[in-house]
Length: 134
Image (cartoon, rainbow, N blue to C red):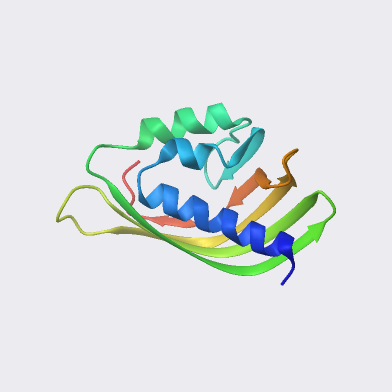
């Protein structure tokens, strides 16, 4: 495994840890300011701020989330990379409520930052939502 692939896998892990901890600022920091977020059934979010506005409006107090991410492919092309993952999420709307589940594939285009790390430039989430009250 190359250093770039390790760094990219670390970026994915950081996303999961931040989301599960409710650290939304930490999640948003992993997205390029001009990043595009594509979520099935919704219009494109054409910036980090647009996605953050949507995500923060959808978050309700008391919700918890669990995520898993199976990396299927990582390919680095200079200062760009693509990552194909199989993801699963469980969202609990309130303590004691049954979890709502979603799963599916995602294809992400990453860009190397000036500091040498990686950020999400385009994220295409194709998870099928099952019973999630948005």
